[in-house]
Length: 257
Image (cartoon, rainbow, N blue to C red):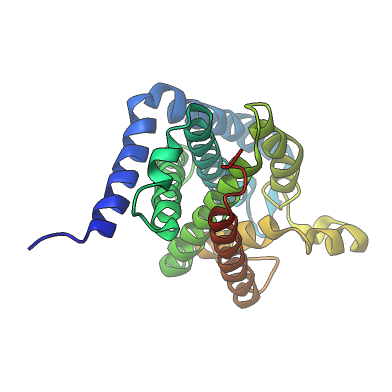
């Protein structure tokens, strides 16, 4: 049975993207694992022993879902933004754009590639976490759904960054000045119940806050937000960003001189 040409195009892009980062796994997979391990040691063991319990759990156990989510966010985003901008820089993306491949297929291939890297790093971090605590996932379906939606959202965000970037410096501005502050203020290392009312309201405007807490609910069964609204926000972000990416691709934003 012959494969549809759209499926072949999608499969080709995904395989190419996966091979791109697995070929240089020492640069793409090992550094995030080492960085997160340092968080486990410094924040979990050293600082955590002084903090005590957080949200009714040992501090190390409390921060692990957030650290896994942080790894998925950063790697899903960075894979797409670096890969697609490299295609722009080398002008190899023009060959794809003139081919009879729908923009939705092109976008989907890059997004799945980013998701694979993010989820793979997340799996590595999870395995490393097992060396520190005995992880028990309370709600597996919620955990898997949240992490998949998060990988999609930040892969799409990375794609938008790549479209507007004009230099390699441009692809580091958003991760440095926007993404990193949102992650650290997203409840990875603390419960929002410890914050003053004003900062609790500010946290409610941070989408990563909902991702981290809904993922923590999947692991530990506790959350600072209701899981239902968190799912709605995640899904809404995914739909909006996908639509924006398609509109920008159809217009040729950042791709036409």
